[in-house]
Image (cartoon, rainbow, N blue to C red; front, top):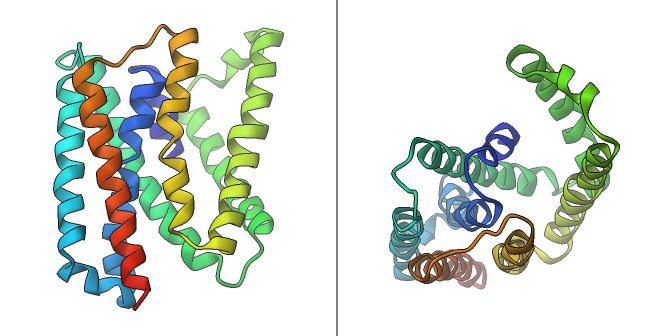
Length: 221
């Protein structure tokens, strides 16, 4: 999951990645059908299948109408992002199971430990970790900020939110993320989404929200 996420930024821009990655919310609902018996009635939910159709249309639209969609770099970036989205869904389901009897901070510490070991091995096998020796002080500062805010802070608070208020509300709040990322990416990377991408992007987010709603409606009964 982390490998796909990190690699995607070498091929496409942040806002586009973040928007496409929101499809993970739908996959989370879909995989829940397999993992949790009490959520299998979703198969009979018209709202759920409508969300599926909307998400698929949104993904196709936001990618096909990308200005350089047909280039090799864009295709690789899109595949990596969708692979990340699917992996994130599995990760979220795992968290939901694990957090039933575990402390959120302790759980993240354990996950971070074995993730760091696995990524370290992959870095030496397929990457060039020696390049870190030539990084500037500013580069190390950005890396440290990213580690504290984007990894430790965001994951720990997400774990805590899921445990305290359930798995429905946090994903809905996170749906605002692509727009916040776009604001920053527009300044830093001069990234813009065209009108078609905005339309299908909003459609993708609406479909994801509908998937969450169908799951929440199921839990009321």
